[in-house]
Every structure is written in C-alpha cells, then in structure tokens.
Amino acid sequence: MGGLERGMSFRIVIAEDDPVARRDLREMLAEMGHEVVGEARSGRQALNVVADCRPDIVLLDVVMPELDGLQVAQEIAPDYPVIMVTTHSTGDFVQRAQAAGVLAYLSKPYRQQDLGPAIELVISTFIRQSQLGERIQALSGQLDARKLVERAKGLLMDKDSLSEGEAYRSLQQLSMKQNVSLKQVAEAVIAALS
Image (cartoon, rainbow, N blue to C red; front, top):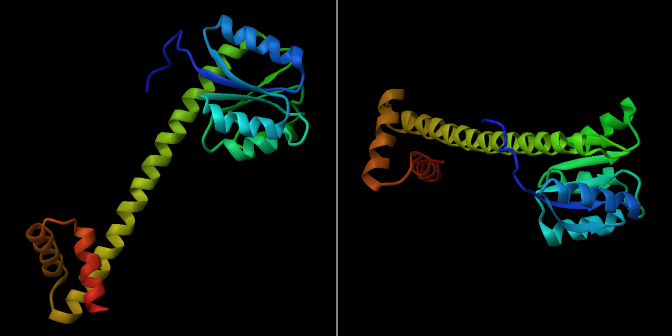
C-alpha cells in the first residue's frame, strides 16, 4: 500500500477537557482541511460523541473527568484509530497507551507540523491492522474448513475402507454434484456418520 494522499480530509472527534486546548486543536485541524465532527469534555461524553459521530480519527486527552483517555481508548480502539494528546511521555505511559490500542500520541503544546504526520501514521496503521485482521479471519475460516474436511475424510475412510485420496475425491464429487462448498459437504458427512 502506498502512502496516504496529501490533502486527504478526515472526520475527527476531539476529547479534551481544556476548552482552550480543544479550540487550538479544532483550529489547527480546520487549517489542515479536516472536519471536527464532535467534541467532548469528559471521557464518558467522548464515548457518546464517538458513537454518535462515527469519526475517522479520535484525539483523546489522557486526563479527563469521569473516564480517562486510556479507558476511553480501550473501549473504542478496536473500531477507531486513536491519537492520544498528552503531557505524559514516560515509558510506563507509552506501554499503557499501546496496551489500550493507541496508535500515536502528541505531546502538548500541540504543533501543526506534528499533527499532520500523526494523522497519516494513525490512519495508515489502522488500515494495515484492519486488513491484517480480515486476513487472519479468512485464514481461520479456511483452517476450520480444512479440519472439517479432514474429519469427514477419516469417517469415510473408516466406513467405506477408502484411501485418503479416494475419500477426498468422494467429498469433492459430492461438492460438485450438489453445488455446495467442500466445507458444507464435510459437515453433512460428519453429521451423518458421527
């Protein structure tokens, strides 16, 4: 995958309890061509705003009332790319942020020259992770189907004294004849012979 196109515009939610910092972020993002679709002053409000707005990116402050940014990140990071905005940069914080699913973080005071690369990084990383998750899910499905076929082959081999190749060809023929997947044939054979 190539880099992101320059000038791409993203829908962003800002969760920051400091109104001045929130305004500064909103203005910087607008100057960069992004749309701030929601703002929150607390962690709980951030969860609601994210659910309502369904943004492309979420900027979260660490220290907020009700729920902190790391708690919010844990809730939303599987579905939304998160950039943590913080004054904390200790090794312990970075580890906790990674564990919460944070993909990038910015240190205060915010600077536009740091915000642009963080947005590119978080979007490209999130896309790669999503694609990897889809690939893992597909491979897992293939492995499950393969296990069913192996089990069905074994049952046919025992029942009809077939070789492994003969049992597999028998499953393939049933699959083609009935116009269903090999997995479906294997499931039917297992159900009938178990």
